[in-house]
Amino acid sequence: MTRDDADDAGSTPDVVGPPASGTTRRAVLGLSAAGIAGLLGGTALGRASAPAPGPWPVGSTAGPPVGEAYPFEGEHQAGITTRVQDHLHFAAFDMSPRAGRDELVELLRDWSYAASRITRGLDVSASGALAGDPLAPPDDTGEAIGLPASGLTVTIGFGPTLFERDGQDRFGVAARRPAGLAPLPSFVGDALKAEWSHGDLCIQACADDPQVAVHAIRNLSRIAFGRASVRWSQMGFGKTSRTTAEAATPRNLFGFKDGTANILATDAPRLREHVWVQPDDEPAWLVGGTYLVARKIEMLLEPWDRTQLREQETVIGRDKSHGAPLSGGGELTAPDFDAVLDGRPAIDVASHVRLAHPDHNGGTSMLRRGYNYVDGSNALGRLDAGLFFLAYVRDLAQFVTVQRNLSTDLLNEYIRHVGSATFAVPPGVGPGGWVGETLFA
Image (cartoon, rainbow, N blue to C red; front, top):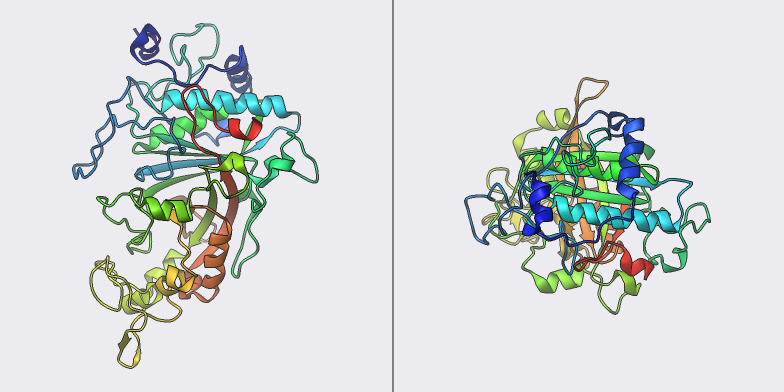
């Protein structure tokens, strides 16, 4: 008996209705003809086996169990306040010029159905990798056979161009576009590339096993065939933020602790104020959802590695050993921006910590869950590496405020923003629901 045979025998019911008749089979057959490797640049990695055990106990210091699973359903989409997993595969998609409203709705239903299964450690459909017609391509690519759920979360977002592109309302939703959903304005030091920016839709797949995360994007991309295609994608490792108090603060590729003051999943008041769209916000269909900012930030590691330790700490505003602010104390000590050392501010006025701090941005905060990335070497033989920055906010103006304040950041000498995208992230779904149903209601 395969894992899907067991599921269909009644051990774990599906929570999202199956796709429209023929949808997944048509998508898989079409993608087989086109070639999966061409779509995702030859990457082939994957997912789970039997249904996973319950959530990781809060306060555990032993790390997540191998089979940890997070439900796809909930008031909010998973992958936002969920504890930050170790690996990421993020993809932005563009809808096909031939696709209309019906195809978009069908795709979102199909994605939600598949996501509700793979986040439980199952194949994307009941027939999956092994139980279908042996003379037809399988629904699931199968490289995840035997792997557990590994804490996989799938988070889906809608870009500005989904609502309107070149003045065209392709899907009948232009009137429901959030007023603030737009590409970000230009910032000092931007070196953005079109191939790393924007998109009609996005999927953020996070997991503790990179094969599980990539399997999710690979298979959801196959399901999209003929309706949407990958515009760009990014793999990440080594989380650079935390959303749970028991997690140690991770380090970025500059070697510094990152995300010390991040909003935590248990901080309900700050989540309401800074992350979740509230009932008195517009539009109503997005209440319980949020906005996502994705920025690909290239880090100039070779110049940084030749910089004196004291100068590195001045640039960041924290000590490299423990992450304590240069004004003194421990990592979690609040920075004292008035502190003076040897006649000068202990924390430089142009340091990253000072300019990014809520005290210097009208109280603005963001929930961050970015990742390190290394994409090999560039034409100069240097590491093509950096931070794939992800931040969830109640209003995109929050990010704009902070980023503009960072125009004089000492860190700008060592980084370049090369990619940018914004998305509205709908609220979560109930049993049998699908992401985006509030938009199309």
